[in-house]
Length: 61
Image (cartoon, rainbow, N blue to C red):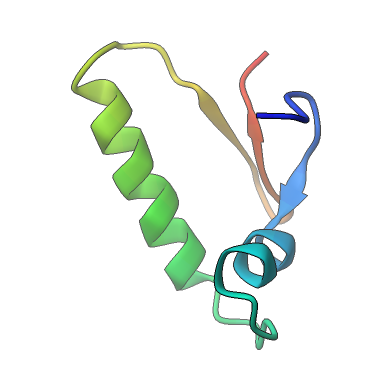
């Protein structure tokens, strides 16, 4: 939330969330982002998280 226009790679998200080395398993991040999106959809139809294919995620402008 502090960096609303910044693009975060899956590696950055994994290492910040779990304080552990990223070993290339991106399904963990994908599943968590999906769960966050589902929780947001319960309250609004707006998409707050954009996927940048092959790189990572960012907040929607």
